Length: 177
Length: 157
Image 1: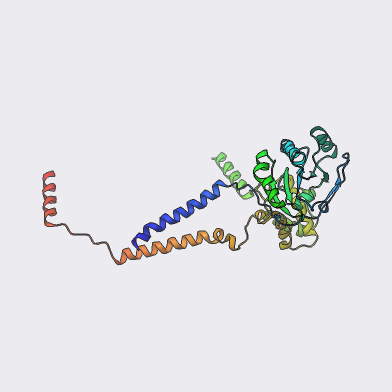
Image 2: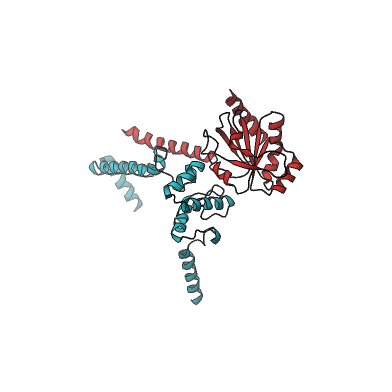
C-alpha cells in the first residue's frame, strides 16, 4: 500500500508524459481524410478550354491505380510539385488525372504550356464544389485511387521527391499487389 | 478622471461587443431570417479546414465561404441541423466539428479530466482521513535530550 502511493503518481506522470509526447510530436494541423477507403464521390467535370483533352468524371477512374491531383495556376506550391508529378507520370508511367481548381482557364492553359501537361485528362472545378466533395483542404492535394475507384490515400500539400519515394510509390506497389 | 472613464467605457464596450461581425457577407445570406439564423449557428460549429482554429462563420478563407454557401444550400433545401452536419462530416470527418462528438474514441477527452479529478479527490480524502484517525505520534524527549536542551538554553542566556 505504501509503495503504491509512490508508484501511482509516477505512473500517472508517465502516462501523461507519453500522451503529451505523442501529441506534441505529431502534426496537429494534418487533417485525416474522411474518404479513405471510400469510393470516389460522383463528379463530371468539363474539359479545360484550350487543352485538347476530354474532361474528367469519377467514372474515368478505376481499372488501375491512378493519381488525381488538384491544382491551380495561382497556386505556388503546385509549381513546385509539378516536376515531381511529371516524373511520376512520365518516368514511372503512373496514370495522372488533374482537377483544375477555381482557376481562370486561360491562366491554366498558359501554365500548362509553360511547364508541360503531365495529365491524361483534366476536369475543371470552377466553383470548387468537387473539391468539397473530395474533402479538399487546400491546393495542391493528391489522391491515390485504386482499381475499384476507391480513395486509398490523400496527400495534402505539394508532393516532394521524398513523399513519392517513401510513401506514394510503396503504397502504389502495395495496392497493385 | 474623465479620460479614465472614457477608457473604461470603451474597454467595456469592446468586451461586451464581442468579436466584430462574422465573415458572412450580406450577399451570402439567406432571405429567410430563421433559416439564416440556423445557418449561422451551424457555421459556428464547423471548423474552417484552412485556418483550423476559426469556425467557418468567422473565417475569410475562400474554402470557408464555400462551406458557408453549402450549409445555406442544405438548410434552404430543408435539411435538419443533424443532416447538414453529417453532410459535412461525411466529406471532412469529425475533425470539422468544433465540439467533438461523444463516442468511445473520445471518452478520454470528455471524461478524462473529471476522472483524474475524482481519482485525486479520493486519494486526498483517504489521506486526510488517515491523518486524522492516526495522528502522528511525537516521541517525548528523553531525559538526556532534555538535559542537553536545558544546558544549551542556559548557555545562550
